[in-house]
Each structure stands twice: as C-alpha cells, then as structure tokens.
Amino acid sequence: MELIVKTKINFMGMKKFAFVLSGIIALVGLVGIVQIGRNAANMGIDFSGGTSLQLNFAQPVSLEKTRGILAANNFKEATLQQIKGGNQLLIKVGKSGPDTGNVAKTIEEVLRKELHGASFSVESSAEIGPSIGDKLKQDTLKAVGLSMLGIIIYIAWRFDFKFGIGALAATLHDVLAMVALFYLLDKEINLLFITAILTIAGYSLTDTVVVFDRIRENLHKRFDESIDALFNKSINEVLSRTVITSLTTFLAAVSLFLFGGEMIHDFALALVTGVVIATYSSIFIASPIVSVLENRGQTTVKA
Image (cartoon, rainbow, N blue to C red; front, side, top):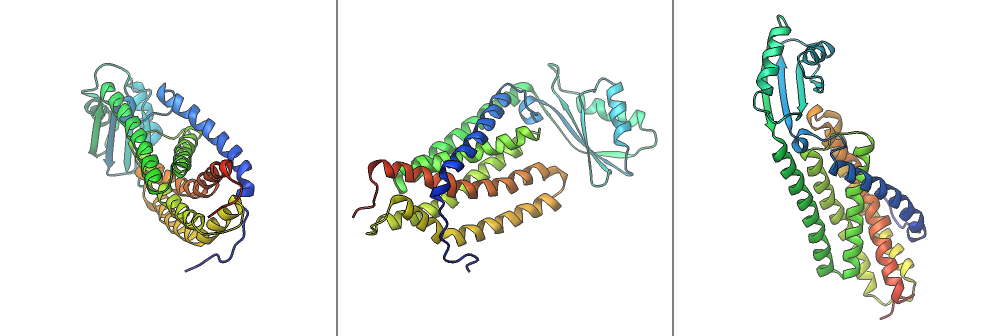
C-alpha cells in the first residue's frame, strides 16, 4: 500500500532549519527538566507525595461548592476534577506536612457532613509520602537514562556508531519536546506521562531503524552521488511506509484522546503529539545528523 509514490523531497536541504527549530524545542525541554527537578513544575502526587481520592456520586455535584467546602476545612490547595458528567469527582491534595495517613478519610468525613443529602461512595484512594515520591523520581530518571543508553548500544551494534549517535539525538529530542510541551501547558507530570515518554521513545526508535535500514542498504551499493543525495533518496523510498505507520498510530492515539475519558486524557495527548514528534525526528534529526557525520570523511559514496 502506497499513499505517496516517487517523491523527490530535499530533506537534507532543510536540516539547518530543522536543527534550529529542534534546538529551541530542546532548550525549552531542558528548562522544563530543571523545573521538574526543583519541583517547580506541575508535579503529580506520584512524585511530590500527597493524596488522591475518587468519589462516585449518585447525582452530579457542584464543583465550586465542593471546592469551597474543602477550602473552609484546611484543604485550600486541593485540586478537583469532574469525570463522567459530574457524577464522579477526582480530588488531589499535595503533600504539605509530615503525615498523610488520614487525609482521604478526613476529606470523606468532611464531604459527608457538609454536602447534605449527597450520596457518594469512594471509588479509589491513594496516599504517597514524600520519600516515596522522591524515590519514584530517581527511579524514573534512571529508567529514562538506561533506555537512552540501550538505544545507542543497540543502534551502534546493528548499524554503526554514527547511526547510534543519530538515534540517540533523535530520541533525546523527542523526550525533551514532550517535556517542553507539558511544561508549557502546565500539564501534570506523573507516572502516566513517564509511561508515554518511554512509549514514544520506543516508537521513535522503530521508525528511525526503518529509515536507517534503507540508508545502510543504499550506502553499500555503488552510487556516484553525494551523501546528502543518497540520504534524500533513502528517506523518500520509505516515506510512504513512514506516513502510513504514523497515520495509523496517530488515529489510534486520537481515539484515546477523544473517547478515552478524563483519567487518561493527558496520557493520550502525550501519545498524539509524541507520534508526530517521533516521525519528524526520524526524518529531520536522526538522518541529517548521520549525514553530517558521514560528510566529515567523504563527499561522495565510494565502493
């Protein structure tokens, strides 16, 4: 199946613009990582510690009224989110003191007392201490770091060290781009977001390997053409496959975003944007970096 046939797009001619654009995105992502490290971003209770409580009401409840009740009972920093037309309420309270043991129970008692006549049940509750949150943050950084290391080792073994550098740069770019997006949108940084990052990193690697495979095949052939021309030809040859695969994955992610519900809304958003970012990086970041490294030693491909 081919949606795009016989293209002759000069991708390598756009690499300077792509490098500048991606550099800006990466810079914003680095700022976001620094802010996350300082707990200055919108950190979820997975990393900052706190309490999460999901309530199921028999009838829709007023969000403002509930927020006012909690504020009046020393829960001014609580964040509330309505789910399923207002019948379900998600309440999150960040960690502000040394003890978290009875926060969920206290909130439940306060609402049963203040919301006269409102019948509700506790769907789920979770409480995470600050020490656990810090450990989760450290383990997350290790997981991301090890995945980056694994990527460069795998690509360097399967292809060449230059290809490993290109794949690593593209994957780092994807991670930083997603961090930049969530930081700028003030989205919550939680374990679901980290899951989305690792998912997109794997998708980006798969897409990059397909492009690299064709580049390697063409490099082994006897062509009297420039490195950039050969890279352009290789990318154009697999462009239809790249578009079809990315479009299929994108549509699945959009379906999750539109119909998956509030609980995975941000996760689905990360997948939607991540697919676009990963497709872009495999063409405009990974391949151009390898072409630059190849051009350092030669200007034409030799047998």
